[in-house]
Image 1 (cartoon, one colour):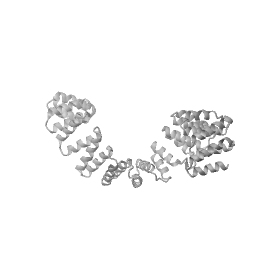
Image 2 (cartoon, one colour; image 1 turned 90 degrees about the vertical axis):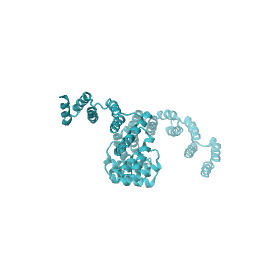
Image 3 (cartoon, rainbow, N blue to C red; image 1 turned 45 degrees about the vertical axis):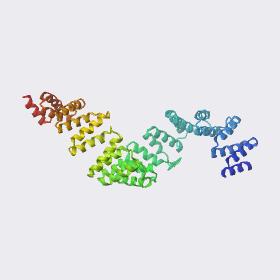
Image 4 (tube, rainbow, N blue to C red; image 1 turned 45 degrees about the horizontal axis):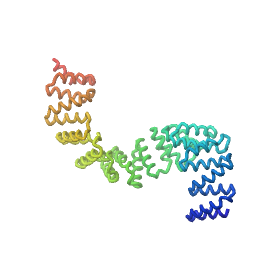
Length: 414
């Protein structure tokens, strides 16, 4: 006993080599109960291989001691030797006191391997044997949560009458699970029952509040998060959006710019900053941010179309033509781009080019009422009456109450 105590003192004094030598030399004369004490010391200090060696020897001496199998399985799991752990755990009979524990460990192993149905079966077996055991309810809740079966997870989390298990907040889990199935008000109630202070929970709390229409809580939560962690990138876009919804574009713009200082490759944040700058009549800044978004992703449709609309506002139709041609040069095509090119060429009185791009766009928008009406009028203006009548006939099938177009068609048919 004095030897074991001395080894512990050496470990506490950060002299592991001397401690191991002392225990190894003592092992041949140690009693079996002392060997178990040494195993616990080894496990506490992370000497897994040494602990495995001792437990393996003890198990060969006491093959029916299932507590040894449980301890050995734990060590195998820590060493990523899952197969050896499974063999030991499956040897434990149902009548043994450690059977429930073996089922829980096996469920963890199968879950880690993605064998969710097998893990579920092990846990349900344990649940049948101990219906009210909170650890089993927690394990089932965690399994279903990881599988995305949040309603089932909620059923088992609600059976637990303690605040935390394994340092995991049950109310936090219930809040997340309810939010993920769209029960935002219920999720909000659970969040309000816990001390929300870590960054991830603050973000989720704010997101749930915003989804429940409680922008005041979302703003408070996310502002607190930024104070705690100004490098939490995801929060800036969400907070700027909420400020925008609350009709505070100046605050939203400030938050977006703050976010861009820390997140220079966030195209969505550049796009939002561009929209907000435009709303605040900061047109040069708006163009800068939208251009940054497009530079990051030239196929970012929202940003591309916003830039086109901005060019329309200042009647820069040549700018639209050049911009879309640049996109085409990069191999980026979209029927919407051809429609916008047709409009821009029309405005610059390049009617043949306009016709060409209207025809290209027609292949995609042949069932789009807005396009058909615009295209039909263009065809009539260009004297292409027969084609115009065909287009308007299709349009009237979609919009039979447009008497203006119907009357125009009647006049031309006569």
